[in-house]
Image 1: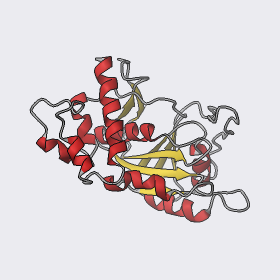
Image 2: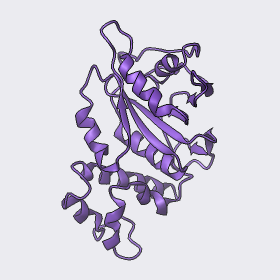
Image 3: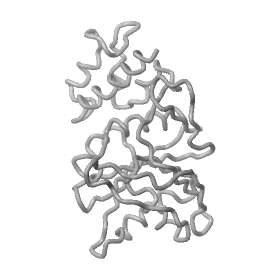
Image 4: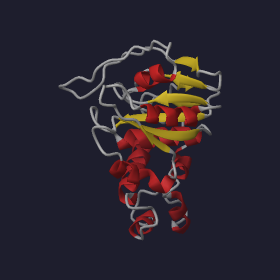
Amino acid sequence: MLRRTADDSDPVERIIVANADQLVIVTALANPEPRPRMIDRCLVAAYDAGMDPLLLLTKADLVDPGPFLQRYAPLEVPTLATAASPDGDLDPKGIAELTDALRGRTSVLVGHSGVGKSTVVNLLVPDAGRATGQVNDVTGRGRHTSTSAVALRLPGRDGWVIDTPGVRSFGLAHVDPTSIVDHFPDLAPGTGQCPRGCTHDEPECALDDWVASGKAGPTGAERLVSLRLLLRSRAESD
């Protein structure tokens, strides 16, 4: 069961979907800009729910996805990218690769408004008829077009795809704070040298040395900042 809360202090859990086995985290490489902290939170939620994550990058025709993907290379999270073709439609190669990744699975798409979830769903399921919208030129944010989650069977009856409304926050009040670091698989091994009772956000924490050694990958320092921001948010909420 994939859940979220409005923020890290909200006691009310919002059920996004039950009985799905793959979480497709959809983010645009531009317009709107990607938000790594949001992706990190979705990954924690996926691991906590026992789901397999898949990172889907859209608008790869605007920005090279390579540098952004380096952040997640140490996690070995499967990644795909879609780009617009010269005629304005999505490149069929990217959709074909995504279809292969969804085959035989029950997959739920989650992401901010405007990242292209419903556009992708309409291409995967031609008669879906999901409403799509434009990104606001001033705020850089998408407008909410989908107002409810809907499960659609993929053509050939080989799997399901679930489109969900765009979210602006992904609270993790339902996740045990002591397990959060375990959901950062590039950092968790470095806690073996931490002192007993380490909060992983203190001067004696061994994660700083782990990151400095390069064992967490080239973006380990950024990921450690993301972990600690999340831990602090949970601690302040508690």
